[in-house]
Length: 425
Ligand code: TYD
Image (cartoon, rainbow, N blue to C red; front, side):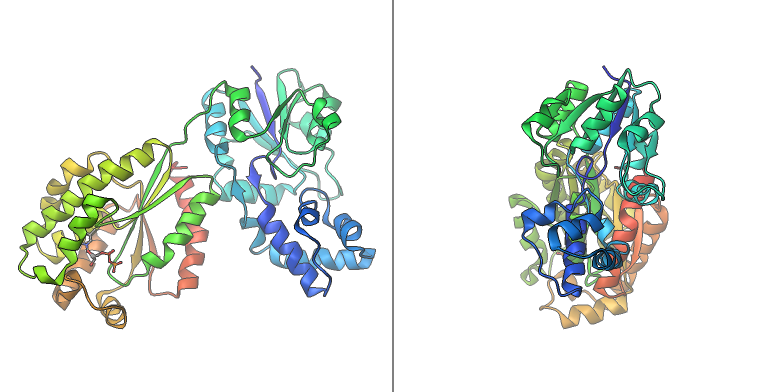
């Protein structure tokens, strides 16, 4: 068993290709140069960019410098975030940490941009150190970086997707694992020089840990008044969670599984205007009990990120506040069905009841719930605000009155940090 684990970053921990390739493409288009085929473009990932512009696009030195400037114009503000943690990496790093191992990153990126990526994607807390080339160095000497992290390489393994990583290990006496899911174009001869090879993150986990550790699930609910825009933002949240390395399950309430979808039709049909507030609250709770049992609990047990468009907080606000049954009563109604499955995080899209009303009128025909009067929505809004204050630890509050684009941007800026700070990822 090793003690020190040194990981390369791009192509090993994260799949950074999307942001790099889109930014290269953008730079070439701005320069009026033809964009090479994807197989060639992939070779831009890893080595210094100016060299690739010259080798693959026939640029002069001056053109390559301009190419790099244009690349940065997009990569620095947005491209760096178009990155994805390989599924399985997060639980692997967590398990190494749990076992008391020392975990490092040695990267060709600048220390600043490596740290930014690792912090944003919530991997930073699992690391004991990062080694990166100094600003003056054109290319990273990975062997030197490895030595700077682990002067004694006896119990050390270097894990990476390019031959440079294996070479670093050979130069310093460490072991190496060549991973083949990244961007490296390995020859047989190069692979034969690595101590071990791994085709997938699973195989890597088996080599390093003797097992494939399960991820821990995360349960995120989306809440707010009707018309708050949460349904539009669901996909942004789903992509964010996938970028953090999770498999995702997108679901909704009332509904989410066959029995609960039937209860949904009962609840929302305008034919049932005589339904009592208590019957309504119990039906929401019944629908939720089935949904938790059929969908939410099993997905969390498999380590998935469950993103649920409305959950029990809607009942607390709409039936507890709006229908005036009282929040504590609604709690009791829901206890048996929800059990320990309260959301880990609740994204609350805050809008006031007047905005909600305006947005509802401009949308489709109102369902039974939407037919309620203004006083009902005023009370529901107040109840949501009280819940946001009471559960501030799990509530991420966003301004739902902003434009779609602004809300999406705020989600990208705040959700990963929120989850990481709470220790949920
Ligand atoms: P939903 O389908 O989320 O509507 P929208 O996407 O327009 O917000 O929810 C349907 C309605 O059900 C909505 O008006 C809120 C209400 N609702 C409750 O009153 N209690 C609950 O527990 C839930 C989940 C929803």
